[in-house]
Image (cartoon, rainbow, N blue to C red):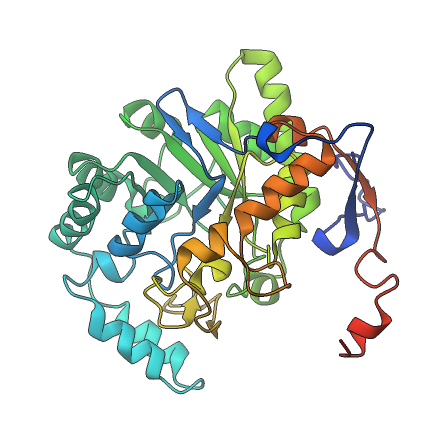
Length: 385
C-alpha cells in the first residue's frame, strides 16, 4: 500500500498519486469469483449489493433513474437544489440544455437555475421515488440543509448528503450562522453523508461531527472545473488513502466505522477497483452513468457548480448515450474500454487479487507504476488493432 500523506514540510512538495500513477499487484491467493462479494454497508440498516452511488448531478439522476438504479442494487443521490427542486416538470429544461450551443450552455445553465427552490417540487420529487418502493439519498448544500433536508426526510428520504465543493467541520461566516454539522447529524433521523474533502485532519473532524460516510474528492469529475478555476484539489488515490487512514484511526479510537466513498475522477472500471483498493468502501460516479439510456441528460452531463451565478466551476460535457443501465453495470460488455460491466470488472479484480470482500481489497498491495498504461501498448497507442 502506498504511504498515506499527512503533514508536509512547507519547503517540500509531497508526492500525490492519481489513478494512472498506480497499479495493483496480485498476491499469493486467487479466488473463484463466486467467493467474492462486493456489497457494502452504510450502517446496520443500509446494505447495498452494488458499491456504486449515482452522483447528485441533474444529468445523471432524476426520480426515474433513481428507481432504476435502486433496482440494480445501487444508491442514487438526487440533488434537491437542482432542476427537480425548482421545477415540477423539468423535462423542457433538459431539452433546452441538451440542444444549447456549446458557447451558450454556461449562461443557459445560470439562467435556468435562478428559478427559486420550491418545497413542493422537493416533496414531489422525493415522493416519486418512494412511491415506487426505492431507496433514495438526497443532496443539499450546507446553506440549505436545515430547511430542505427535513422536507425530504418527511417524504421518506433514506439518507441525506450534505455536499459542497469543500466541506469542513468548522466554517466561519461573515454573512450569517453557518450550519452546525454536529447538531445537524444529531438531529437527522437518517444517516448523513458529508463531503467533499481530501485530507486526513478535516476527514477526522467530519467523522467526529457524526458523519456516517465521507465523500472524497475535490474537482476530479469530468464535468468539474474547480481545479482550474480555484487551483485546489488532491489526486484521488492519495486523497482516498488519507481519508481511509483517518477512518481506520477513528475506528480504533471509537469502534464506529465511517464509510469512505471516493467521488469522481474514475473513467473506467480499473480506476474504480483502484479507488476501492486505496480504502474506499464504495464509489460515486457521474459521467460513467450519464452514458446510460435511462439517464435524464440526453447524452449530456454537467457539474453541481456549473450553474453558479458568479463563478461557475463546472461545464456541460457531451458523453453520448451508449447502453442501457443494466449493461453498463452488469454487462455483457460490447466494448473493451472498461466502461461497461462495471460490477463484473470489480468482481473479477477481487477474485484475481484474492479479496473476498471490499475490506479485504483494502489490503491489496499497490505500487507506483506510471508506465502501467503504456508499457507494451505501442499498437494501441498508435491506434492500430
